[in-house]
Length: 414
Image (tube, rainbow, N blue to C red; front, side):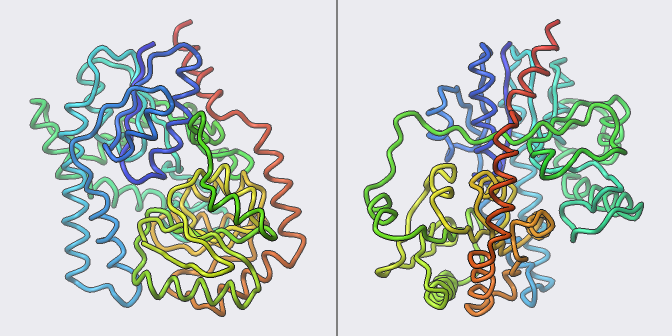
């Protein structure tokens, strides 16, 4: 089959699809990934074709979203975020319209691409499926991932509907413009979502049922496949600086905030250095979008490195609890200290705590060297966190999330 995977966002919104795409390629499909141009190298090393989206507004959007945190919230920051969100969604209209391959047999859509991509695929009579990294269907089993974690209860379904209403509203201008470009009668985001549910549009979720079981009250067609691990390029070699550092002492602590830009990088670097010094731990700090830099005899700063290679060589991982980084830490089998910043990160951080692999989150707004050091002492000093992390990693190693999707696609041809 000729398959397109369309996704948008930061590295965490793209990397898992390189693993899924590579598995589908190995199954004999012709696979193309549509994503922002900055990810061309990551896609190319999988042997996949790539079609770039013409604009990448997500760095601006992340910066605007950061302005909504804590005491920095103001009418101006809310307006800036609303405008950035509108521009991000509008940029996807042109991108998705121009990117959909009219010869495709199947289009796979990420959660951010789905509100627009499904309309375009239907317009061209191309079958489509959702491939989501987070759950977005309301359930009583847990709260929506953009809200604080709540125990099971019907109120969670109401929270889920409210969260979806907000998302549908944020896409409102883009959805209206897309229908106008295609010459279709306007349908609101809410109505498009209702149609999706009514026809049982299939959605595969790229997280582990061990980490987040499929809710019993989900409709047929919603499946939890397991993680789609990012593809690691053949022939990749780690930098000598890193291998020498790892060999020179005990396993270090990994610290990274991925695509987050959480405020003053110098302050964050100072907090990190002081916390590691208080605990007596070595550290590997990933600069990321935050621009972190900590360098001394016991800490090195690195650029992009495959988490699948680095994290298993560490004693613990300190991260922002994005979906992809959370998954990488669980796969590595090491305890976590989540420092959530925004959106779904507090939700995943709470899940890590409930799974028993973390002593609890340290919200970024409350981050100090002392709090981070205390959490690291517990994560590395209490054996129960390491035991539970090892146990969960072993269970994840038995799952084949990409294979589940590949088998479902194969069934379409029978």
